[in-house]
Image (cartoon, rainbow, N blue to C red; front, side):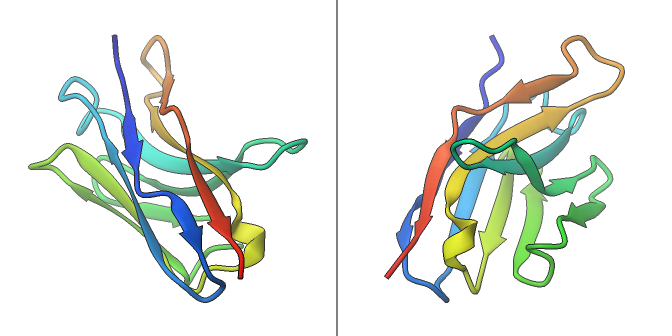
Length: 118
């Protein structure tokens, strides 16, 4: 069973920083594109950032310039560095692995809570 293991969420004050980590098994990392999504109650899950197997990042407009997604091939881990956090960044953040031609095409982590509050 494929598991994406997330860590790094927590409570942070506005303007602060957090780094989320997601470790994937070898059968996934380097084959699937990786990404982070977030969800608040009552709303759809939304894209935060993705990174292709070639290392090309993509960001939601709402986080561009404040977040950096990166991968460590030696550790099978993808990171999301979040800076200048705002209260509206509060959400459950989910790690995602995506491969259009695979079945299933998506795997999800269990989610990690990020709360930005003073």
